[in-house]
Length: 545
Image 1 (cartoon, rainbow, N blue to C red):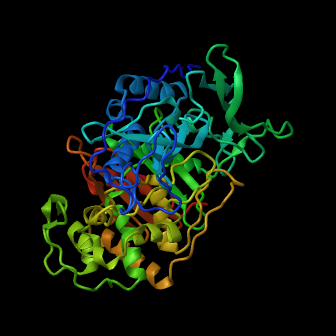
Image 2 (image 1 turned 30 degrees about the horizontal axis):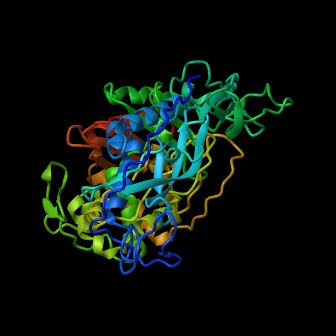
Image 3 (image 1 turned 135 degrees about the vertical axis):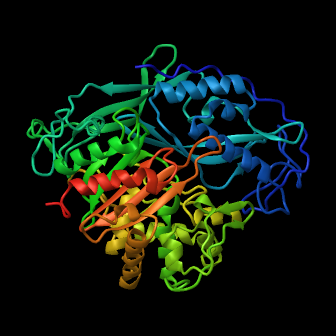
């Protein structure tokens, strides 16, 4: 395997004069004169009389982490004092360790370091392809430049505290044979008939061990000898059960129907999850057979499918009722102009109409009914979003950050801004909404469940079911109206960027099954995800066995 052959970092850049530096009056911060130089009160990244570190420094830190996480390495490197070296090291680190889609989050309070930089702690969650997530803590050193701007003071140790000019990391994979895998009824799903399952085979682990194994080793650059094992993945299989197949919760009938249904994505990347409402067991999990598992590990804005959670938050506190009038204009400006799909409008609409027609402006107009962070709290407390899930394969479990400003709060009401989810999360959200109880999803038996949630009140569940049913009979999910069964659904259209078409979403439930579909650049949910869901539900029984 390739390793991380990093360069020696340059000497720290010269510290320029500090102009207009903001500061914080924080407990435990002591400013004194000492050998080697300190700052007199009123200077430095921390000083008396202000309420926090310089916002410009924190903005630069967050931007660096966001660029690194998104793979925008030239942009991330450009925010440092040594762009050329930084780009080479970041590229070598992620590529050499097979890291896919890092998740980097500023965490804890910034502090003034001995060298005069502002040290910003962050948590790194590095998903290593096929093995699992390597989690560690590090710090970004920020230094003010002569022109008053802030830059990341480049050094190897910011990537990982133990990375240096003397030691680097190497990924070691242990050769393992993919387990034999069956569905819930004992039917093999590892024979090539289910292309979406093939990438999962090496990631599945039975209750007695097995699955992929490997380590991240810290090694001496000069000798190549291992200094220490930094992270380990996988368990040694139990010899007594090593030859037994891994039984999954998948249903071969549903998996095959889902494989066929995704053929209606017109060549676009798409992903689908179907799971049981009563216990969270996954019946079908489909994603392109090449690349990462979008269904369980993707990070997408869920768009208007998130209005299920927003509606739950509003209904929980009695902030709105389905028959309340909540006007739906074409446009609404909250820092920027928001509009509805095809700039539709529904004057004098009820909240029920706003839900069934997916009116963005109506939902945004209700943002004042929710406190800061309340949407995220509801998502976590009732739907388990953002808690740590253990389903039997690596997953991304969602994020609902507290909005930074009123514009972001408006966006979060309609599943945009910094809210991130995937089909696994949204299928689970749908199941929770229509049953009132969160069940951690699973694709194998015996997984750890450390989630803690509360049940939704019966009245809220009844209202949500009625709203989703009306979306099928009278709203944007009418594409499903001709199917048998009491189907409820919600469509979603999620903006991606100015130069990409919107992603299309649809979630639905029928009987004891909840389904979520996303189509990348599908433009609209009803037009792209709708036919996929219709194809699936047409081909399977109303309830799984």
